[in-house]
Image 1 (cartoon, one colour):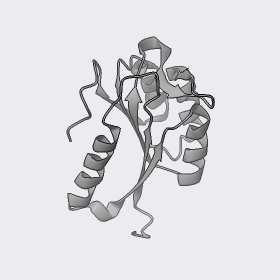
Image 2 (cartoon, one colour):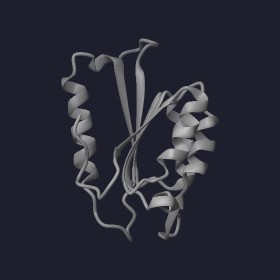
Image 3 (tube, helix red, strand yellow):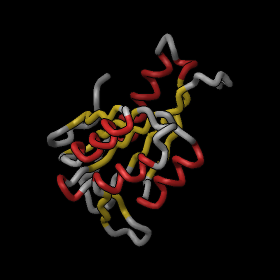
Image 4 (spheres, helix red, strand yellow):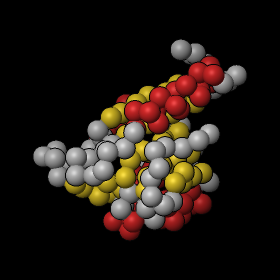
Length: 151
């Protein structure tokens, strides 16, 4: 691990609730990790992973790891938001408004948010956060999820 202050911390939030179709999230994360390892600039990034993330875990992960980049991979449900699983195993949605409010609390820290989720129509709301705070929000997949992303 590089102790350089210029190291960008990437936090991957992966979730595939029981009530949703199984995704190849482990493969997606493996591919991201491999791409970083093969990169000429691999020493400039530190990767942290949080699995089976519940809505309440997002804030804690941001506080604990202090990421510059957040990468969400999982399911989206259109205007209902991103899909999570609550403490008792029920499907729970987090809307774009809630995410935007959360990210605003960390505006000096978070530089980029990537959302790799099917039907994640909440991007416009989260993008409004980006415009207000001069941050970048990327959506890696708009339609039906097809097993990850290519860099």
